[in-house]
Image 1 (spheres, rainbow, N blue to C red):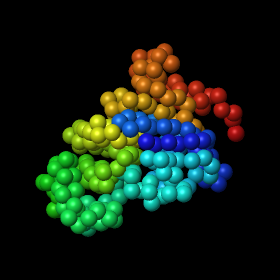
Image 2: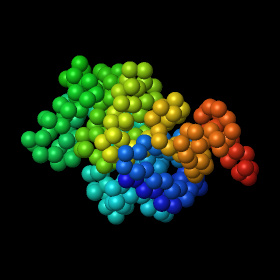
Image 3: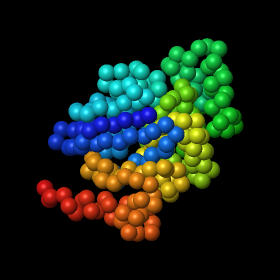
Image 4: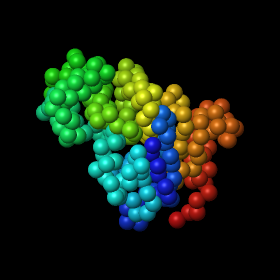
Length: 246
């Protein structure tokens, strides 16, 4: 389970995240939507223990990201927006390296790597340097790396941005499989069709806050429109229009 409770984080005078609360339950997929600068990536980086909140608490599988960061990292699969691959390593070498970082027993490392190679159909390019791979291939390797340690929760930052239909489908299938296996899944995206296809719930952020949350039908009913894109714009613009001018 992922639990975010009244979390705030500032960058100097910029209030990146303000009093944010959100829960993601085992077997659930939640999408985090919002315009650029809404605070999505900051929120995910705090969950991944890369940033500390100024106030509030974040927990993964019951462990606090500040007081128990190592326990959180052992139970969280995290994929960054820039893939984080090492260009000189092949996908097999890259995945094996992260198995060692997770202190997987030597007897299990090869099995874990080959399971990810098969799951994401990496075999065709598994022995080529990551620096030679296409955007879609790199993203598949990145998501495979996030799932190597059999995590309780999975957090992904815009996992399908810039991908073609085939590569996007690999990511979609992986997220559905994660939920089916009982993992809590949280991902940020600008691609509304991904949210509609995958999410049990959607949380919409603007100005560092969650301004609306619910299933697609609930968000459409709340705004009285027929398309998620219209609902998103209505909710985000409503918050922007209500904020006082600087």
